[in-house]
Amino acid sequence: MLTPPTPSPHWHATDDAGVSHSSESSAGSWLILYFYPKDDTPGCTIQACGFQKSSPSFAGRARILGVSRDDQESHVAFREKYGLGFPLLIDTDGSLHTTFGVGTDYPKRTTFLIDPTGTIQKIYHGFDCNDHAADLLRGLDELGA
Image 1: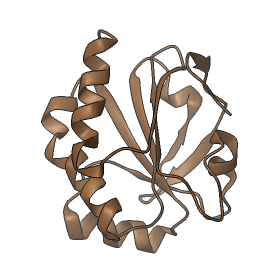
Image 2: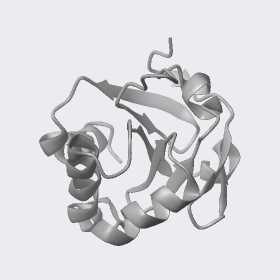
Image 3: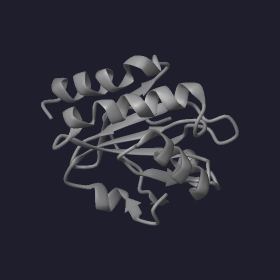
Image 4: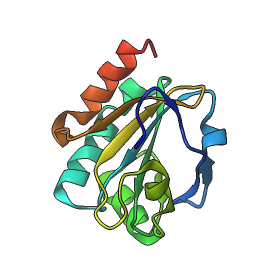
């Protein structure tokens, strides 16, 4: 199990638009890497829309990447339906879930706040989806980001 502060595992994934993302390409900026169970379900929609609504507050401070086991078609539909302005990483084989230890069959809703050096500074789980974006903004403030 990962515990902060610890180096982020090396990872690589493609998003719903076919763009490649990795631990290396994320270096140099704060990253919010959030794992959620399923596109277009109530809690996941609340969480994603909370990030979207707060996107002006995250701009210039942290990049947001969502991750679920859903496929590209599902991610595209989810992003379009709710106007999400951040990428959703495709992890149909569960490899990214396994790398971060969030479960594959029944993934745990977990968010990693990773600093520009690639160090996991905070891990969030067991949170209220309605307040999650605000929790991350407070976390960035606490860390001076």
